[in-house]
Amino acid sequence: MVKRTSNNQSLKDVIEELISTYRISDKLNQARVIGFWDSVVGKMIARDTTHLYIKHRILYVKLNSPALREELGYARTKLIKSLNKAAGSDVIDDIAFV
Image 1: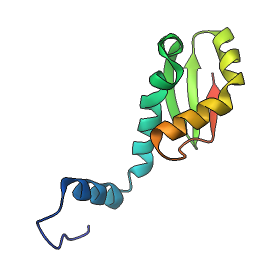
Image 2: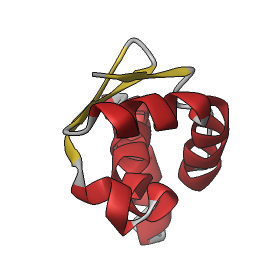
Image 3: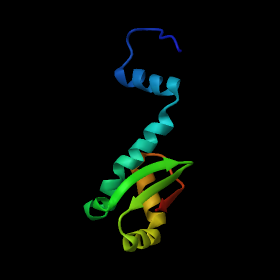
């Protein structure tokens, strides 16, 4: 663990140091993408979403509606850009609707 040189660090610096030390920035970014799903797609679509997870830079989205799955497939590229922009970094490369 990195030893601190002074006690006069801001809370932001300490948190960033912890994130770096424990190498959890990728997981935090993934959580951001999943957290922004509702605001990016809207309440109507979010209501039909039952499960979200990220594995190997692919966002897996389980949907209740086959018609919605087909419709979102057409907007895949736009959704990827919007979610990455909301998260502040390139977290996902693709979306799989299941």
